Figure: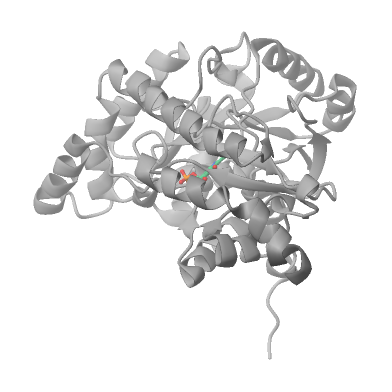
Length: 392
Ligand SMILES: Cc1ncc(COP(=O)(O)O)c(C=O)c1O
């Protein structure tokens, strides 16, 4: 029988998505795969109903419906502080997931080196392999997940691109203006693209604030800014994302995107125009909502005596389970889902280095769900001492 390709063999299934199945199997509260258990804004649901009734139901323009691109360019220009032309600088994709993949395929030649900070969102390694690139990792070191500028300079020498996730998953790191300026200088020195993943652009906790890499002096020309509506409007299932870049890059990406997917769902693009026209107060409220959830969930981690790194952005927290004598690997997370009733992601899947002892929880859940999960986690240490340590 014919064999599947070496590429397809060379990476495993997403550990994050697999943990959702483990959570379902044991009926655990799913704090692994990051998606909300609450509804999107009501005006969005009404717009989706309208679009289901009235259409459009056929293909939109492959790089995005005109009214969606116009609303998106207006909103992003406002927040990013740079002019964006809906006809020149935008491609609408099936989530940031496709935007990142299309960016890599359009920017990188087989054999090129691509720099990735580690820990990283697990898609990036698969993106690198699928585009034929060689990933080179630069470690972000706890507790503030800072990087060594010399290490980054060495990694970038001769590289084609750097992937920058900001705010970052899984660490919750928000890169400072100084760090971003340094990255900009090094990317310029290396003449590399910077492919950003900014899906958590509106989930940043005061006093930190999000700085868009493309808005730094001279950086728009080498930046492909990828993001999506998934997290900002609680619509991860709608699969609406985008990339913003200079015309010469967007032209390449539009072709890649067209042959990958043709386009994102036309009726949902129509409905999401409503989201993109929400007032600025919506984004302030979203930040406030998640700040409250962060306080609530982290208060349980404190009470349970679970060491963690407080996130400055996004909705994840890395918990250090080493002092329990646990590894935080797949077996530990399966045990926790089964015996404690809470599912998390094994930290190992985010690191290039052989680093054990972390698990990642997310807190994009209703307060009542977070309280229920928190109460269960208060019993984690005892359950582990009672039998988990021996069983795993
Ligand atoms: C950093 C990061 N990028 C991309 C995605 C996926 O985004 P989308 O739903 O827009 O494909 C996620 C989802 O968890 C993420 O955490």
